[in-house]
Length: 220
Image: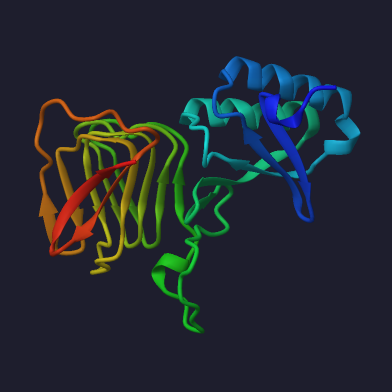
């Protein structure tokens, strides 16, 4: 009998659907092969179900996330509704709501609680994306592209253009990306241009946020 811990990806049933947990060392091909077999064998069981992708221990690129979602749709008419990036950050794939654990509740909706703007492609030079809430880019932000958001900016790729989070003055906003090497970073009223040159390769992603009245980038 094969242990769940040794599977390329675990499929955990929950009240609202299924959670997919890739093995930390599994190749993407093995993950896709396993899911293709599971979905084909249990097509009716997974039919039109909601799926949450848990990437807290295994990173997947934007192209891989899209390929996995396409497989779910093709074989079971299922689909990803949420991607968990870390213990305190998850991203709604279909635009319901970006969530951060421990956020204070309020009876008055703030811009960050509104539906995020989701761009399902790379932002190329000349592109300008504006969001009154969070902004999620399923691809790269190339040099010459600009992303502006009242809340957080989350890039499932490399950030090499201009990113302005917390554009309405929210200094707690963050910028998340697999690699941050931008022309310019802005959070609220602060501006930073990260130094060029070699830097440690992030394990999963990098986070830009305000610390002690300056924008700093943390490799995670």
